[in-house]
Image (cartoon, one colour):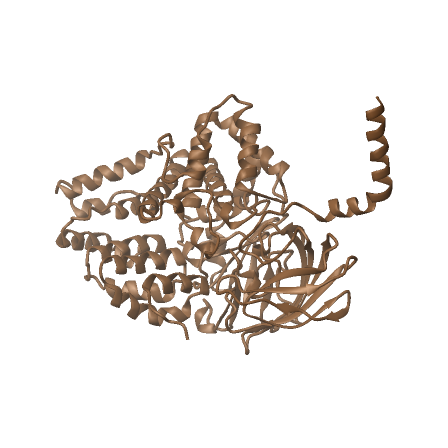
Length: 622
């Protein structure tokens, strides 16, 4: 009893004399993980809210302005931001100008921007401008747009490129709210990953607010001659005028997708789900910027056959935007979950067979990726170690398709009802927070496996190479019919004309083209193109997989050479163009690839340029 009294007395003394310090530390310290891709020290001082005030100058192709942050700290004497290829002009703390320090420049990470603060500092402002080397920004001339009348600007922040257009603590775990004042030419509309206008005003000045805390890579801006068309009160599309009706038709099921997603894993947390279709130089299929998904025009096929991409970006509203990977080593937590969620949305809307076809294609992509990493087996782990590397190196099929396969295998083991209940609670409990792989595994063990008395080889999936033997088997009856047709065509019992008359959907056609036998004769390959006209396919996915096979088979008929070159000159989606340049390189046609790339490179975003520069092994930099 005396010991207990002494402990109680000591606790009272502690509370009386050190409570104020403890409260501050508890308020500002969030136990951030170590992020080797950011200079920021958020456990000492972190940004909580951003006010962005900028001008977009299309003549100089720069952004100028001020980023003002509300900050919190634990008695820190400085706060550290990330900056890359920016000109920092002035910094102030609570309105008083202070001297900043820029660290040594790293080719991947850029520079640390260190600003002195005091114990009670509340606000830090950074006045800056971008430069011609700013990687996140792509200024397009009118000829690079659909309508060819006005210039265009798009940003791409993932993974660590937001620091190239905003000085910021550029780690995914440092979530913040933001507001923005953006001034653009009055003939253009500015939109952001925030609350957006539905049309232009007469001043060219636009204000934005994102009330929910998001990761820095999700801050996005597009400026162009855009119009808006509603699909439902909470969904709609932006596009250039010549594209808007096509886009509206293509994405007509967006509201159905949102409802299907909500039925699975809870209420959509971002109020509005809009999509903007960008010019073809956009490097990704889509980017899940909250409230405003950025999308490539390559998905506008005219038949809604490629809209699983929209389901994927929508799914990110839960896995990625709501619960975010803490570091880029944990990227699979964003993408594996999102592919799983995407397949569940597609199954809910279009049936299990359709979802299985999509998943089967992903499984083929995964097998190809693993083969490509046979000399780097550690690259096939779900949990990565990207220290000293560009986090873009981890953005491949391993995170997406191995992550999906892990979750699908887990679903088959524990049962779909248990899996759905687990995921719904996971998103609810961790909403607007970040997640490490280790923290997730602990949560998975406690909340799903132990509760259901299930033994599962989690560590083998996450920390070991390749695919574990217990991986779920993905089958498709429709793909089986395609494979039977390939066999009949190969042995001569099915003609090319009859083959091309088959009532196949886009996924079946893709499966067919990707599985054309390597040893097929050039004569037979030519007859196939003559019958099916694949070289003139208007569906970009069909075109991409066919052109890859044309390169593999040294096929030059039916104008395919010029079609491939035109495709590479006009499409900037990294997956598509890298597939074709890789095929050139694999088939000892590197000089042809370099010739085309020299002309195509100015049309590509820096994300795509960096990938192809490295792949082709030539110095294209100025």
